[in-house]
Length: 150
Image (tube, rainbow, N blue to C red; front, side, top):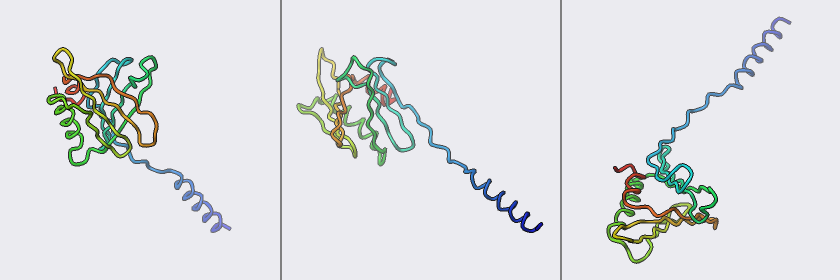
């Protein structure tokens, strides 16, 4: 009887400790840059591990604080490449939109120059057909701040 009681206590002890599971700590999200105000025309760039995320207020609906995101992995300098494409467009002002295809989204970069100041707007469309919206017009100074290049 004592052996049966000891065996059942031992099994009970294993069963209760098996319920405890040590979780891995998640990688922290680091904000690279942010432009705009907390409630109006915000564009934010953050990185979690190798995943880069752009969070922006949908400028198609400025009366509603609707925030959207698009992401890609920063593999082989993809983030620096994205920055380079934007800055090159601000310098050379292409006649047509620059189209960047990401795994889940397509980003069209639209450029304009007014009063001798170039700016860019990102128009995002999701591959699943959902509306992605647009960012506000961003100057070179805004882009440098967003990508933490100041």
